[in-house]
Image 1 (cartoon, rainbow, N blue to C red):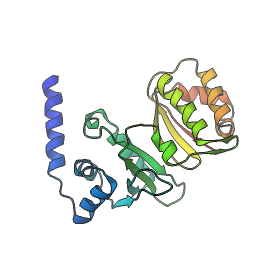
Image 2 (cartoon, helix red, strand yellow):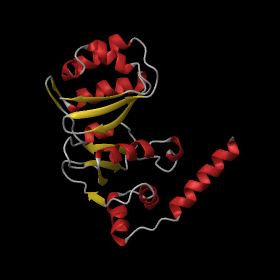
Image 3 (cartoon, one colour):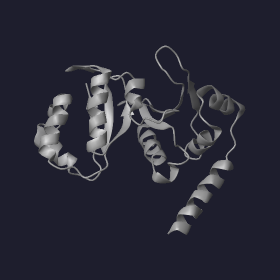
Image 4 (cartoon, rainbow, N blue to C red):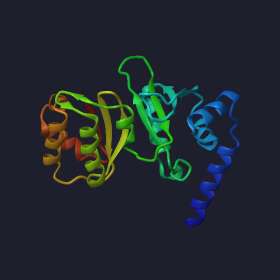
Length: 210
C-alpha cells in the first residue's frame, strides 16, 4: 500500500512538472504569490483562463481566479481538495467565490492562505436576515468545523456552501441550529425535518444564503 501511495505521488509530481506556463501565467504566479507548481497543478485539471485578482483595500490577499460552468467549478474545487493533493496545496485555500443560477459562469479562487475558513473573511460574508456580521458567521462555522467535520466549499457576499464530511449525530437538533443561523432554509427544506434527513446523507452539502 505504501508503495502504491509513493508511486501515485511521483506520478502526480511528474504530470505537474510536465505542464508549461505561459508568460502571462508566470506573471500571475508572481503577482498572486501562488507558486508555479500550484498553477501547473490547476492547469492539469482545466484549460480555462487564469485571472489575477489583486490585493486591495477590500482583499487582504491576491487571488488566482478561474471562471467555469457551475458543474465544472464544483468539480474543480472537489478535485483539488482530494487527499493526494494535500501536500502540493499545503498553505493554500481553494473555494468557490461566485455562484450563478443562470447561464453565467461560477468562479473558483485560490488564496495563499492556510485557514480553510478564511474565504468567509476574504469575501466579507454577511447576513441580511437575520442581520449577521462576518465575524458572527465565521465564529459559528468555525465551531461546526471543529465539532461537526464541516468543510467550506464556497463563500460569497451573502452565502456559504458547506459540506459535512463526518457522520452527524442528533441531526434534528443540528438542523434547528442551522436554521436559526439561516432561517431561509426553513422554507427551502419546508421544515427542519427534511433538513435533518439531508444531514443524514453521506457527506451532505448545504447552501446557506441570506
